[in-house]
Image (tube, rainbow, N blue to C red; front, side, top):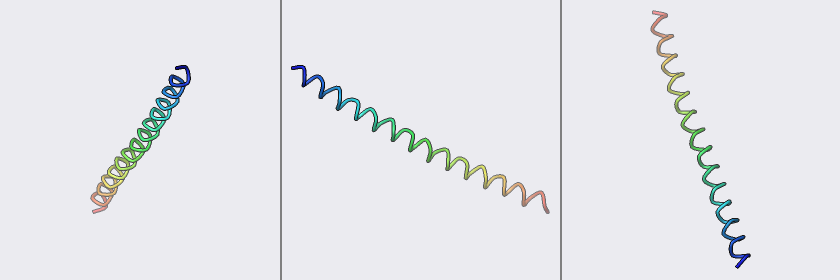
Length: 51
């Protein structure tokens, strides 16, 4: 019975780690897309002000 609990804890920690890693991955992608949009907006504003 003890080893069953140990294995369940190990599996739960592995799943939790995977969830945490994917959260970081998708937050990074989201921030990168947001940064790209802001850079495009800045570039549009810079070309408008040159005219």
